[in-house]
Length: 629
Image (cartoon, rainbow, N blue to C red; front, side, top):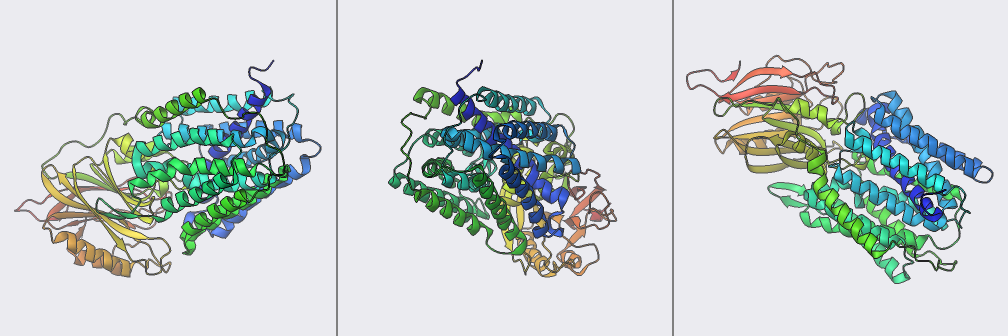
């Protein structure tokens, strides 16, 4: 006997399918870069071909089983997806992670495609419910994905997720299949999931824009979206939703301002896009569920569109075209396709929306979880950390984080934080604050909570990817300086942060220079960096420069920085890249001559593909010799 009605069970099964899919993609996508390939060194078309192959397998399985063995395949796909999802949380990265994530993706897509045909009357509501649960729980975890966590919070959510999937599927086992959802919805399902992941349900981006307020707004929007998913919107309402979706995506991706001294940053009021984006998408899906019933294969074809668009978008950062416009165009295409759906079937007379009291309770619970959850689920590390030294002294690290993914391909911000807690000031490169391809985590917010540090972020490639400074000292001023690319496909900048180091004002500059010719190729950009450093030095304060400079000691670019008046704080320290077999020191800490650098070190952590570098800086004795000791 089922614990819930068969129709509700079907809805829960759909929600679980989407929730598991989102978690699997959170591992699968970054695994393509960190395990299958190596970011900028592996051709994006090769990674794209592998990704496309995974989806093609799902399309073939659906095509072969949809007519004769749909029920058995649905259960088998559920079992495989659940095992893969649990295995990912148990695993330690490496090739096994890539294989498990790929198998889990295939199984989740097969399950979703068959469920859209079998549970058509709840397909839209179930899909949106799954997204709402996913985004709320992700927000409550401070955007540190459950699939990457080995603590009680991660395991508790896994148990709930698996139970929801199994109970829902079991409870709906004897339910007569309902008419499939509309063909347009089946086609638009995965492209809509792409828009949700990149923008309108991206908790990482919402956190970067407005902190916990952004997370709370997004959680509330998820509940509103569930309510709208159960409606039959009028043509006028559908066109309004289409316009709202395009506007939301454009606001998030295209609108930037100078904020607190840092240019190219998303303004806080962009949070309005997160209030309306997901409800608009839910309205469009509801409209597209009318019309001709879909075959399961239609979801598969839509998944092919999803994976192609995913790599068209992110390949733009390697190939140099406007990737953000691809997502805006996708939102417009989804809006038009949904708004022009022909309602050839009579509307379902049953009220499929949750009751108002349920919605109100869900909204309150979601907002509270998103607003208060991060402080509870991401606690500061215990022990360790720098100790108070002489006035003006600071332990400094420079670390290229590779978006938080270690050499084993896992996202372990706690390992990164263990390295950074030994420093007073951390100058960070390749900081990710919500890229869908990297799992949609706000890495900087997570590290700031783990370390109980203040932070400043400066965009480079786009508003949520760039460089940052974490500090235990008070932050007095921040200045972001964009650096011309000179043909490099990834943007660069220099983030200067003036800190009160035990009463001594000091500039700390975090940057990541981008080569444009494959052979260091940072000389021109280094010249612009040197000009920015001279502007800071005009203030008369000491200065520390740190970051991945993509040049080695003795190069022409390196000498340009010494000519500014800087000294190599690391002296003869060893190589830093790649982390598992370092051969080149391209990560640096340079200081002005009025500072003494002591205890230089190159770390050993494999939490990134670079090794961290550390040094202690302090004002030089007026009778001593500045430089390295």
